[in-house]
Amino acid sequence: MYYPQYRPRRFRRTENLRRMIRETRLSTDHLIYPMFVMPGKNIKNAVSSMPGVHQFSVDTLLKELQSVVELHIPAIILFGIPAQKNDKGSEAHAPQGVVQEAVGAVKDKYPQLVVITDVCLCEYTSHGHCGLLHKEEVDNDSTLDVLAKVAVSHARAGADMVAPSDMMDGRVMAIRHALDDTGFEQVAIMAYAAKYCSAFYGPFRDAADSAPQFGDRRGYQMDAANTDEAMREVELDIQEGADVVMVKPALAYLDIIHRVKKDFDRPVAAYNVSGEYSMIKAAAAQGWLDEQRAMMETLLAIRRAGADLILTYYAKEAAALLQ
Ligand code: PBG
Image 1: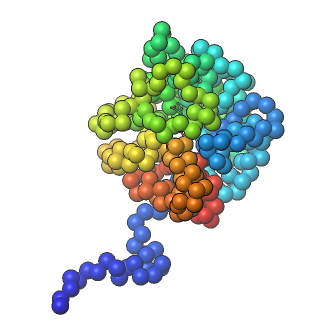
Image 2 (image 1 turned 180 degrees about the horizontal axis):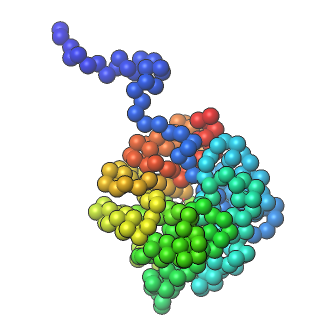
Image 3 (image 1 turned 30 degrees about the horizontal axis):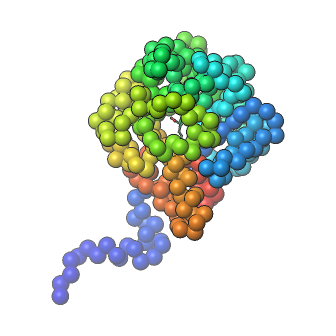
């Protein structure tokens, strides 16, 4: 019997053969490690819904970074949990705020580490929404000034990159102008460009204490049903000055990552969010799947879809395996 010339299994026989035709690479170079920082000393609180993730005070954060740097992870993204919240979220741009203090300390000790800061108000507002309230609505335009102030305060503290995650219209432009006007034209913007309203952020809201006190985020985050709208969001953010465009979450939105990579000429980041991490952790804890394999397969899939960069709570574990 004649069999077709091409037998795909010929190249699957041994690891070296498989290696030779492997199309997608995952490397530590692509990883960004999210970390939570709070005021105080000697704090390392485990986040119960995210095994392996902690809230740190600045001193313990610095200690933890030793291993991050040794693993050659190039970048972290910082989220702050402030001492007090108020309706305007003003701690978010306090010069001695927790993120500002952390950024300064981290850049002092690890000048080579790329420090990215999340720019949003939900951790800082008493109501837990990502912007200022006008009655029960999150008011877009008055929020822009506050976000710009937050970004400038992070840049002043030494941040290399700011990452607005609030989903207000026009915030990338407001932030770009404010940074340029204050001499921070070298500070990059990684825009959460296509950020969906997602159930997969649940565990993060425990870690960052940022759950909305009423309502939800549907009035500003994207509807899960939409693809074309994500392209418009990305296009706008690029026009407004985004250096990196992010899709978030990653796993339920691999099609969006793929399309953004195909249609736009900017580095694409994808956020492997808290719920995606906790699902694997929970199943692995039950002995239902092999955690290392599930983690690496997930990260590889996000790369294969087209992400250049991956924000992931698995950064340390993946980097250790990749070494
Ligand atoms: C702040 C913000 C959120 C996440 C990153 N920045 C939560 C939200 O929008 O409710 C989620 C990250 C994760 O789930 O890992 N707006």
